[in-house]
Image: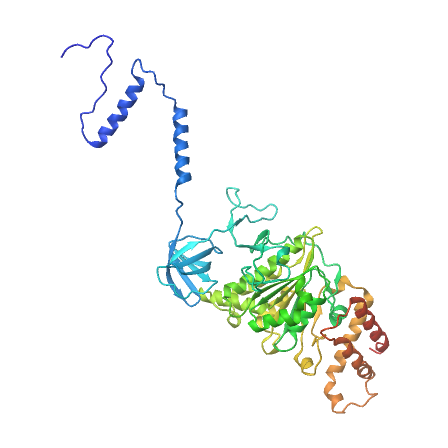
Amino acid sequence: MPASRPGAAASPPTSPISTPRCRRAGSARLRRWARTRPGATAVHDPAASLARFLDGCAARVRTAAPVAASGRLTRVAGLVMEATGLKLPVGSTCRVVQGQDRAAEAEVVGFNGERLFLMPSTEIHGLTAGSLVMPLEVQRLAPSYPDGAEPGADGAAPEETTKHLPVGDALLGRVVDGAGRPLDRLGPISAAHRAPLAARPVNPIERQPIERPLDVGVRAINAMLTVGRGQRMGLFAGSGVGKSVLLGMMARYTEADVTVVGLIGERGREVKEFIDQILGPEGLARSVVVAAPADAAPLMRLQGAAYATVLAEHFRDQGKNVLLIMDSLTRYAMAQREIALAIGEPPATKGYPPSVFAKLPALVERAGNGTHGAGSITAFYTVLTEGDDQQDPIADSARAILDGHIVLNRALADTGHYPAIDIEQSISRAMHNIVGADQQRHARTLKKLFSRYQRSRDLIQVGAYVPGTDPELDQAIAAHDSISNFLQQDMQARAPFPESLSLMTAIAEHFGGAA
């Protein structure tokens, strides 16, 4: 072999193996040799090469088509749909798509291993096995923790998905469904803000106490069952005893900046009647009505109650005094029962699963006064008593978590006594903190006289009682007509708070000597 000439460049290294992989490796070594051979002018800059590589990656990411996660519908059983291929947290919203023209929205309500349990909020006709399940984009809410609590082992607070719905002054005078869609055919709602359905709970230490009475415009409530700003009251009634009329009176006459009405699980006919005839244009002008009637999906009924609460919270956070009327808390519990039983939760008391009794206080506790001088939410929740049974499990649970209850009596309603408030069974637990001693004494006097008459009513009506036998009963008989007239009120008449007190005081002082 001839000797190499002085100064000649060395031959590039070659590989004796001719496979494609080795040829590529040899080409790479050839390029490195070319950059480092004697006399080469190119200088290798690792930082510049890395920057060019990252710029290229960023450009490809910007132009790449996003890959949407999706799963498949595998089963529909009653109210629940099952899907696989997706991992989503409880509360996430999905769209189930079949072909080009069939789609339904659903929410994740549970899971079992790789299977997701979905509850539809819209009609599901036309969906088949294998339908595409795609998660809808939702905003995220970082949960809050009490002072000193650890959010996690790594110190990072996890995020939870939650649905956001429109809130704000644009909804005043409007009627919407549980998803914030208008039902009144008055055009779209241009709300500037959206709030999460799963709001953070108010710290009980920071919540302002109930200190001021609220004028609800109903004489019997103002004088004998005084309600404070920020109080949560229950209206316990069976069917056909004037519950809706009493709610309408409070919606029109209560001294509140904003009224939020949640009609949950009621008949569609009653929704329109309540808005047009009972609430009226005057009451609707400063109100927001959220309607999720009985034919709505159970998920939409749950969401309607939560949405009404979110709207009330929004106005409270603006420093306003809000009246929240929800009709009814029982229908809300029934909707949760339907969902819980559908996903396999075992029934407990009268068929209600345990989750129902956890949902009730979670909803009710969101009402009340705000923190550090913010506004207030005074709430009235109607509770349906089946067959006027006050020991119904929902009624019993609601009575324990509310700040008082107003009971409507069917016997009074049957005699034409409206509002049919049974002052013997009703109570306002915050009344002793917000009224004076004289008002409390006069209210007790009227209640005692009214109760004494009711206990002897049958004897009096059949003429079996001889006047003069019982001086206390004689006093109750003498005061009965005045007390009965005081407790009754026309639905078109408003009774201001001072007028209610003066009438009660006059009756108590006139007839209360022997009581």
